[in-house]
Image (cartoon, rainbow, N blue to C red):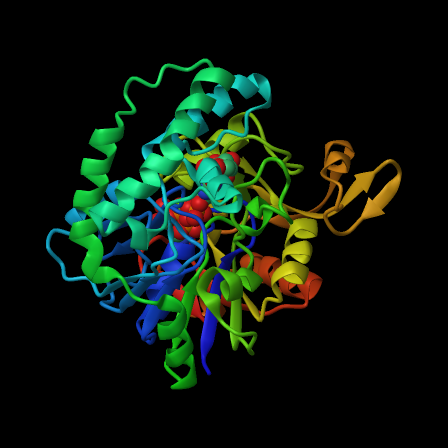
Length: 420
Ligand code: GDP
Ligand code: IMO
Ligand code: MG
């Protein structure tokens, strides 16, 4: 039963969209299992750039795109995204259990960040945290409840007064722009428009796997933004790690053929939180500019740093990678030297994985190994065509992780990829 999971090995934005698009050629279904439109997945084909926030990145390859129960879906954004595809027909299925992002979620996200001040997470402001909090609290609204106006009204009538009260009483925030009747009208119109997409994705994906169809699971965010295993509290509110396909789609435990950890050849992070290998100054600016490291969703400049092997070792433990897709190695080209963090120094002790208590991360300093600089044109078609220093860099990563690097991405274009 061929199942492939594509999962971010770092802090998100590793290039998952590009890898999913590439692999989607042979897939039958591409399924999102976590997150919402906090994600921004880029696919570049023949100079045309597509940015996906909710639609799985298999859309351009014309594959059946599924949004699993574990996703938080903002129907306003889905509408925009479908419009951007300019009438291209998308085979889309949305699970009835999907949680819907309501306007009060965006509101609550913004005010919570405001109140936290210096301690803010630096969220994408898309209402993700409040939406998942409501799911846990059992006051969320599911996709199957917006497709029928009567049901939507009942749910909004039940939930809205509490949200208003919280915003007023706890956050002292004006809620004039949250008009209950307008929300019901807008969401029931969207619900009607999308009613045809309603499908039990759990059943569809399970049956597809039984029939030996190739199902590609597209992770959003990255391992260290996982709500349990990331750098809590500087994380997202869903579970990006590979194991969460079972709960995020609704599958029985089964063997997964490939778990592809997408890792950038260096590291980036958007928003707050610890980042042991972070760079500052001219070198950081150079890498940021060359790698176009500005958020796909929010446009914020991404923090940049050297590749962090303690993080990748931990990511391997958490996800069980069968291979790594190493992206953006071309961005490191032209530097005098390239560094890799092989361990952390923590109060005189050498640590080879991420500590479970995130507080220790603040005391960790990176231990680096240096590699010679190299040139990459993006035209390389095989591993053999890469310069020796780049090959050494990749071989070192493989040896340290005990995982093969099966895909090397040397540019943003679909074609600029080496498959070994
Ligand atoms: P995702 O969220 O993991 O899908 O990644 P994003 O799309 O947010 O960010 C990755 C960025 O790097 C996008 O702009 C991609 O087009 C680009 N990209 C992906 N792979 C490569 C690569 O190998 N080289 C270069 N230069 N850019 C790449
Ligand atoms: P993709 O799928 C990078 C980060 C935010 C913030 C934290 C919490 O494109 O890799 P949230 O809005 O989820 O409550 O924000 O998580 N974040 C991402 N960073 N890539 C993403 O998605 C992200 N999605 C959320 O910047 O630090
Ligand atoms: Mg992204």
